[in-house]
Length: 369
Image (cartoon, rainbow, N blue to C red; front, side, top):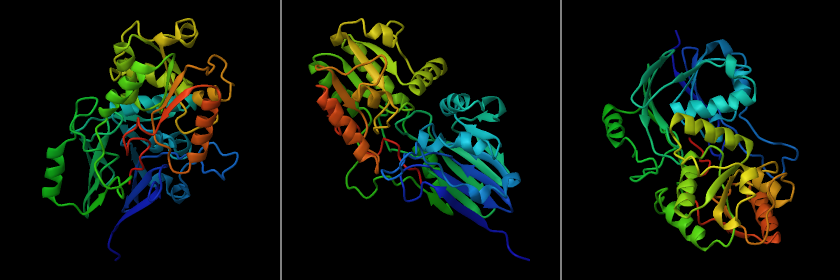
């Protein structure tokens, strides 16, 4: 009789930035961790996004017992609409992550069919032969978790994307005690986020962004346009806080970001004063020096709000001399050409562009494991 073995199969995210998806399989029962997307490479003409190749699961759909999501970034959630069309199983996520997933599934008209479960750090869930413990980790988005997965052959720890940040924006440091407890328990396999691990030095706290924002806002002659990821809720909060300090009103550009902001406000993860947030129509009627626009498009995505502004194709917003544009993210490997093209177009329209220095390393679309 053949001994039962634990299989750990990365379907994406290993050795690349994006489309994180990991399979744990034991006794013909399967647990999936994350289901993300990746931006296309420069030579992928006509391709909008890339998802993991989950063909391995197509003849095993009845063996998949659940999907656990570590946090709400696109490279960990973006493939869910495509996976769920083939493998509709329970999904486990924290409150904010679930909210972001609901926004995404609603856009694909799949929310009613989804089986979503809300978990919190400290919870334990049994999924097939796996007992999953969730513990809090810091990242550039709130509500991230790592996973302690007890299998019949030993403990597997999946870190999720993490930063050992002692002063995170949301005020919730990593659960160092839990990490120590897991180490004392004995770990069979550690699946760890390793983005930028080859770079020497330390990753600064997300709070260093506050000082950088203040410096730019203080000297900006007109509007400030800040580009960030639609799911980067902590960064959006930092921009709002800075805008309020400098007496500026805020508008959101980008459909997904608008939905995410509304959801995060409803769940209590974004604190925006009632008079601080205005519509794009209203922002255009205010003096430029009193306004901030938060937009999607840090990676030069052709259909993003910032890219359309850079090409003059946005219906409501035009970049003009005197605008200050902040690209609050590093270019993901493979996106450099699109990012630089957008930056060049913004310069051509007379904007002052600030980039590269307002984004701590390891905070934009990290790869997971």
